[in-house]
Amino acid sequence: MTLAARSYAALVHHPVLEKGGRIVTTAVTNLDVHDIARASRTYGLAGYFVVTPIVEQRKLVAEILGHWVTDSGREHNDQRTAALELVRIVSSLEEAVQAVAAEKGAPPFVVATGARPRKNVVSFRSLRVAREADPRPLLLVFGTGWGLADSVFANSDATLEPIQGPRDAVPSGGRSEAEPVDAGYNHLSVRSAVAIVLDRLFARYE
Amino acid sequence: MTLAARSYAALVHHPVLEKGGRIVTTAVTNLDVHDIARASRTYGLAGYFVVTPIVEQRKLVAEILGHWVTDSGREHNDQRTAALELVRIVSSLEEAVQAVAAEKGAPPFVVATGARPRKNVVSFRSLRVAREADPRPLLLVFGTGWGLADSVFANSDATLEPIQGPRDAVPSGGRSEAEPVDAGYNHLSVRSAVAIVLDRLFARYE
Image (cartoon, rainbow over all chains, first blue to last red; front, side, top):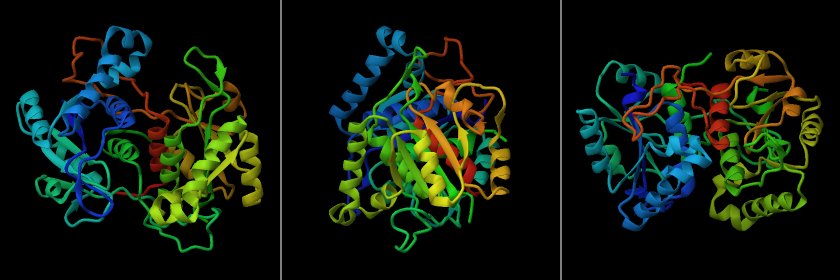
């Protein structure tokens, strides 16, 4: 089984940080469900967990899925249906880990992701090489809001290095050329970050 | 000047296709403006054109920018402001080409993108190598809806190969294991596609 076919994405809405650093629960958005399902399907993942402890939010996701995975949704747009079939709704990351273990017969290797620099991160290449050599499933964990709480990093098996653009990136031509340049800007949306991480780990291209 | 610093993204809302193949004008979405601005800023692009012939839609984008680029928006979230400063609102792709020429002193090399297979596409690697060797600006053109109209491809200098996941991707563990597998699924959102294209062309990572 290829690495992608035993890999899962998880989008965590709790515990995550707000701008000030407090631990909060964010709201599930329709577009996060759709965009990340489509990226997960494109790269051949085994599943995509939407993680929220809030019952009403899990119902909301179930309604989104219900619409598209029913026969009427299928007729309208089967590409969307094929993507949303990957979505699993769970109340916690622990529940996602258990679901992977039940599905694949072994607990996953859990990798936390984030935009901020952290100690002991693994590179994309070394993660891919190590995970391809290990038959266990892989669970890639993404945070909403201002990123995953520290406890998620502490309970993961590894932390992936942040996505960065070109180190020498110097924006030019914008309206703010006179302002100081922050070459380390990496404030991608979580939708974009998931797409890039999956591409770096699973795509093969020239 | 690095390739990224003389490169631009354009998100086209006309002429694009609807599902049935007719040429239509799609609506600008708030999230397309934000997500693609943030990706453009992360990779150090010189600008991001939101292209729509509809006056009211251009006003809508101007209002989004107005909020975040004013002082009150700046105070609230300067990362978002730094991204949105890259956004230019234009009525046509031709206007975007002229704006790049005015800004950089030379017309851009225009590259169309799309999810469907087309003849004479260039690979990511060969595009990057060729563009790094040529000092002209680069304009990467992305379509909303069901993709760019044929006329955009015909008027471009090159077409980039479609994004594909792993060629051997076989989804498993979903609810539809009994169904035929479409290994060529590549129905990414345009937000995800832009993020991946920028990463493939401009990032350097291990």
